[in-house]
Image 1 (tube, rainbow, N blue to C red):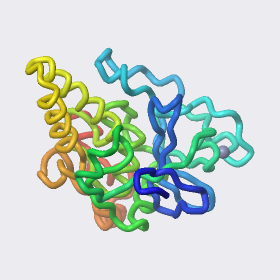
Image 2: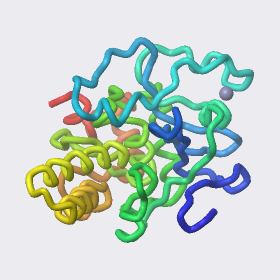
Image 3: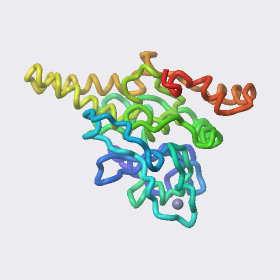
Image 4: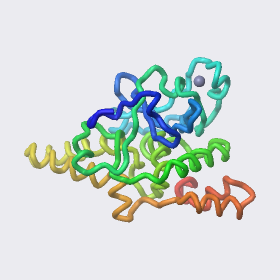
Length: 260
Ligand SMILES: [Zn+2]
């Protein structure tokens, strides 16, 4: 794995890793948590989903990060024929869908962060131990795959993987989710606005860096706004208190998932 490349081999991937794969000629990436044994847990958009994008600029940058039309797989069998948005488990081949394997990086410096030409590859936020990522991913499988409605801007596959790795969950007031690909698109848009107003490329790039840095989940978590931390211990404690795991989850993330 090179200094500036996140590409890894199948021999290098470890349980609890946040991995991703580019889709459609690098237009967007699909993200998940590798859980070992050649399996990946990831958040997908269900078949026949309503269009949640409402003609915003995001449409031009990001498209659905799920692949509901997987061909039948001898390992995954019928697990992809679901209705509705779900956290599912797939074999690595189905997850990659012919693409290369990349490792999402945590706790990167702001220099390394800005050196990345596109978002959705790294974050300033530190990750929790791999066991925590595995627990959170499996917790949502236990909830029959429930992680709320898939939304390209505020609740997508990258948001789910980052949440599994860090426990950071964007609260309902956030304009966008924590996914870097969306936030980078937003930063480009904001920078373009500043550039248009000032006419100065330097000001535009400065604004782009500022917006991208401050929209990264690591930075928003440090600022203590828009993001809550869900420690694994809290999930375990809640499982003991509630009969239904879904109720336990709602007690944590209710304001977001009830759309309040
Ligand atoms: Zn498969």
